[in-house]
Image (cartoon, rainbow, N blue to C red; front, side):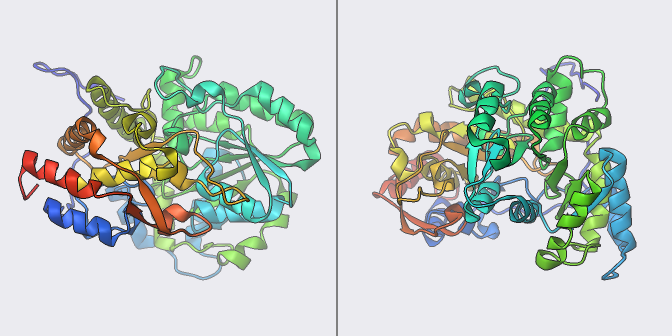
Length: 482
């Protein structure tokens, strides 16, 4: 990975690609954004993409494909069964992960459905460093339970801890003994823990966790959707790995686990997913779930064109020039916001820059969804669509009471190879303006609340006329058209 030096200025992140296709962006006037926010029920998932200037909702399925990925799509084999595209994909996965058996699925949550259906029994426990929304929903749907054992230090918003995704090993041993090994469905490690700021987990911690699991005979599962970011941080932050290549680090990690699943929307930069299973007997006992839920065993609900692109994307996910781009842009954004005094999660992780809404809008009580309110304010004040990662993303307790999240975050995702540095500077500028006017932001309440994954389709409303007042202040600063 080259370090680009400048003659007349401090270093900045450099895009290690050139642009060949562009898509026009549209910045609606402020009053129109206010109307669109009401139409969307104060839920950024319900906004139309054409009404968004900077779409930072996610990096899932929206990363830019390379020229090599797009050209690979032309050789896709459309056969329903026995597609050569599948075998190319399977062989590439075996080459990089060293695991022979592969079950295709249309995306990561489909993999979670298959794993939960196979392993989870009523009142069984799945141990995790930290949950992801859909992973937890599949487990609780089957009456299982989730135990999150991320180390306490991982939940401290501002620190210099390099691996906030590490699991507390003492808590792990205690949890297994309390539950009994027979009642632990599996231990799940998430690389690049999504809901605490895209924070990585160290190789040494993964090794220790899997050794404990082997001692008790418990299956280990890795969610590798954000593995390329995690590998980048392993290489630059972890002693003993700095001289290893990304491919070598990936294989070291893969060798620890019984099962690895991934969303190709993140790992591989295309739309799809799959489950890698080390044990042949276990593989065969799971494979009938793919045609039941996904499609035949040689496409698993995926478009074969996307499969061909993803196969190339796997190699690109091991290219340091490529996987460094996201973390470097995120780090730049986080450091600039931190210099402005904006509460952000530090150090910068993968996925995107994460605003600490608990501190940013500390006057909004958690039952009024501070991260949800802040993410709406970001759209109102600049056309920026982020994602709420807090209490609104949780599910209620069995008795109907609110389950308050450990952290209230607004994720401003930086899809790979999509935004320029000047666009990133625009986001930093608008976040700073919102922070300086934060006392104007109020809370939200539900008017339609789905029972499961409510953050996707729920409809909310402001608890007061704070959006109108915020827009008025914004227009006074920037004018009608901004």
